[in-house]
Image (cartoon, rainbow over all chains, first blue to last red; front, side, top):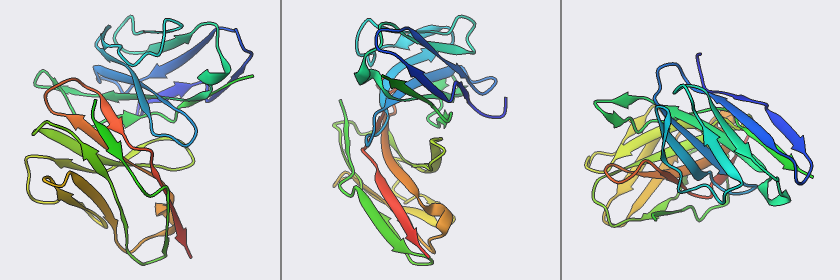
Length: 117
Length: 115
């Protein structure tokens, strides 16, 4: 597609429920990032994919968070047993891989606002 | 981990005037990239300008320019001839050129443009 697409735009759930957030990156971009942005803060890194594999998942806060990218394109961020503290905007970004090295320019989606009641 | 600090939570500027947003960062690396991103209410982060640390010349993109002071670890953004559409959150970001793929963001500056 023309840009990074994230769905849903907004998600309201109850504490303890399971949610999935989807990211469709720019076609041809091999690098994909997930970031979390809490109210009044800058984006915080969660996980980075290069192709189908998670090259760096050091930002995932705990084992309730998991992300997949099975075919190297669309990615899904999964959150189990949601807590009120998980409420935030979840941003996805993608980037090209040039000369075997990830391009430093990120293209972001509009994010998913997750609200846990 | 690298840290990025934006000490101005809010700034305002009169339309057509110039405003400077501040950013400092902490790193022991010599090769890295610095960015300014704009986030309007639509939430989509948009790249405003980028600077490679090995370049001494300050980056410029139309009305946007930076003052990159490597020794001082300072990276300020100057917006000239401010327009109403410039109103947004602005985030400064750092990325290592060699170690890892994480981008580190500051806490942002909310810019208001007064007509």
